[in-house]
Length: 246
Image 1 (cartoon, rainbow, N blue to C red):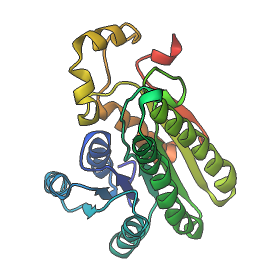
Image 2 (image 1 turned 30 degrees about the horizontal axis):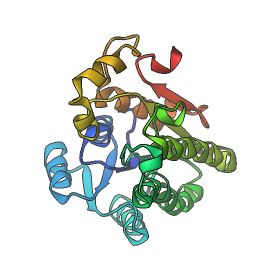
Image 3 (image 1 turned 90 degrees about the vertical axis):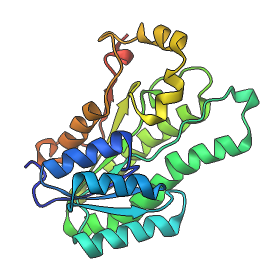
Image 4 (image 1 turned 60 degrees about the vertical axis):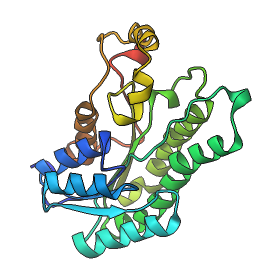
């Protein structure tokens, strides 16, 4: 019960890493509001996990939706102790062929939506004098690979955004950290993982010899959400099977 009496918001909470976090957080005593665009996935997650989950449908790029998420969470669950900024998009494309809409959508989801939601959550955390904000970034915010310039740039920006929050709001008891997963076996990476030749090549870069599971990222989120990490803020933690160690 490491999150007993705590309340969390998890974006992209209906699938993948977000869903794994929701399951684990509830198991550890938290009440959780999950947020996402697909109502069917939210309903399925709520049914699976139980009454400790509040499902709020919306679009992270829409300011009114993120405001409604926070207002609904506070009204029904009482407060916001933890925010997991997990919603994201990945649309690979060679830079010289990239359409403006791909670049804009990547930053609207991966950064602008995070900014809008975090800005709305911060006054709640300031008022209570505590809070933990966890950003699901990527190792591609630390290193770069070809064909993913928009994603690389957005996740690099997210890591710096996290550090900015840590520095600006540490005195109010608010912590902010980034988690940078490597290749994780989720819906988001499913199409990419169908390229067996590419995956075989990428696997050579993973000293542990495998890709990660959503539950392994959720365990790190649990640690950063809990009071066990009370002296950790402004950190950027790779969870990548050793990929960035090479």
